[in-house]
Image (cartoon, rainbow, N blue to C red; front, side, top):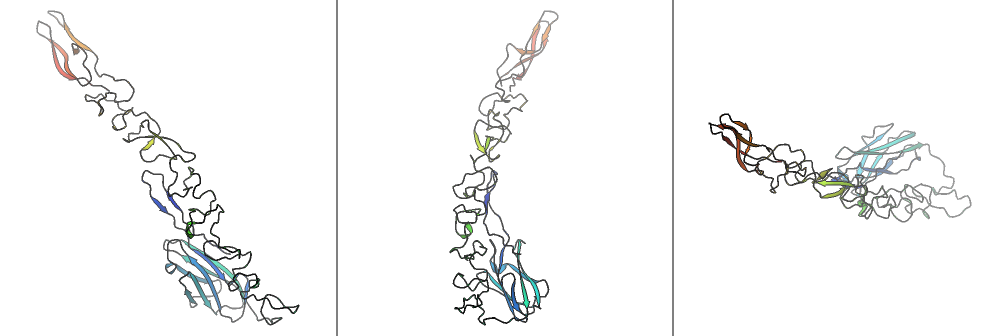
Length: 361
C-alpha cells in the first residue's frame, strides 16, 4: 500500500470586508522508493530501505520520522537523513518470511503521512546463468543488465539504480524525478497547461483543471484564476448587494455584484435615503426638532415630511371662553418655535401659550 500526499500550495482569500491571504498546510509527502513491493532478499542480508520525504512548510530535518516493522523492533536500526530529503533505514534483524516495513512522517502541525513496502526474506537460490541480469541468457546472447531488479534492463530503464524508476512506473509529481521514463517529471497533474506553484509555476491548485491563471472566477469559495483573491466582484454567479455606508441595515442606490456581502456592500435593499447618517432610515419613528445632517426633514425615508402637531388653537367668547388647543395663529414650519395655546385668561378671553418647537420626520 502506498500513500503519497501531493504537495500543493493553496492560496485563498476570504470574501469578508478585510481580506487576508490564507495558506493551507498539507500533510508531508513520503515515498519509499527502495526496495520495491515484493522484492526478495536472502536470509541474513542487511537490507537498506530508502524513502523521499518533504513538506510544504517544514524543513525536512524538522520532520518526525518513525520506521516500523510488523514483526520486529527497529529502534536499533541505522537511520540517515540527507539534505535532499532522502532518508535511509538499514537493518539486519529481519527473520525469514514476509515483512511489512512502514515509515511515518509527522510535521510541526501534527499532519502525518505514511508509506509501506512488503519484502520477502528467502533462502538463497541458484542463479541459472550466474550473472544476476534481466534474462536467463538461454540463447547465449549478451546479458541485459538490470541492476535495480525492477524487471527493466538498463537499455530501457532511465535510472537502473532506482527500482521505482522504469517505463510505465507510477509518476510522483514535483520531486524532480522522472519515474515513468517519459523524459520529464510530472509538474501539471490536472493537465490544464499550467505547472504547479510548488515547482515555480502559476497553478494555485494543480488537482483541479478548472483552476489556473486566466480561468473564469466563479462564486464557489475558490481562487479560480489564481490572482490571490477569492470570489471577487462580478464573478460568475454573483448577486446584487447595496452599499450600506452607515451600517444601519439599509442600502443606498450604489450596487456591486458580489458572491456575498463584503465591505460596505451588505444591504439587500436600497431603502436608505441618506446613507451617511445611521439615524435616517425606514425604522425611524420619532419626530425631530432639528433637521438631518443634509438639511432635510424626511427622517423615515417615506418620501413625505410629516409634521408632529397640525392643530391651530384659539380662545372664543366673552364671559365664558371656549379654548381650542393648538398653535397660535398658524402651523409653523419644521424646527420653528411658536406659542401653543394652553388656555384662556381673564374676562377678555385672551390666549395663554407655552413655547413649542414643531417636530417633523
